[in-house]
Length: 91
Image 1: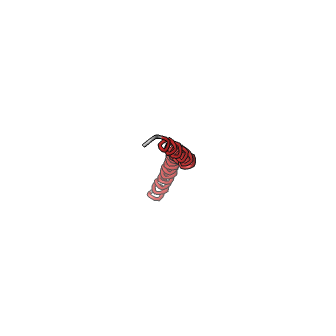
Image 2: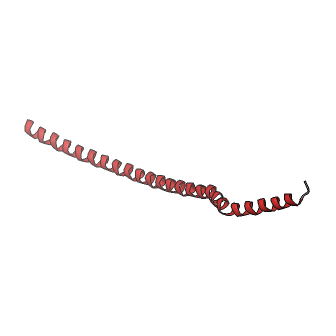
Image 3: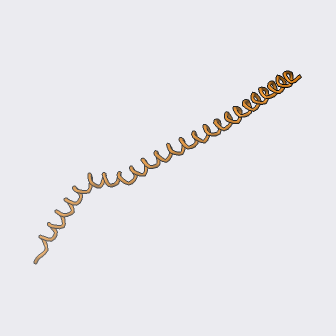
């Protein structure tokens, strides 16, 4: 009788462990799917931030580089015109 009770109790424990393990695995799978979704959202956000940072960098550096390229000849012409104008004026 006691041996039969132990076998029944053992079978119930195995069933309980299997059902508990299955439930835990399903919960784990659901959490992993949620983490995967959040990770994809974070990657998208980071990618957008990188693109925006590069755009802002070009927005700031672009005019500076163009100024370095185009302004010296303009200043040179301006200085020459002002100097010629000042040399024409009587002292």
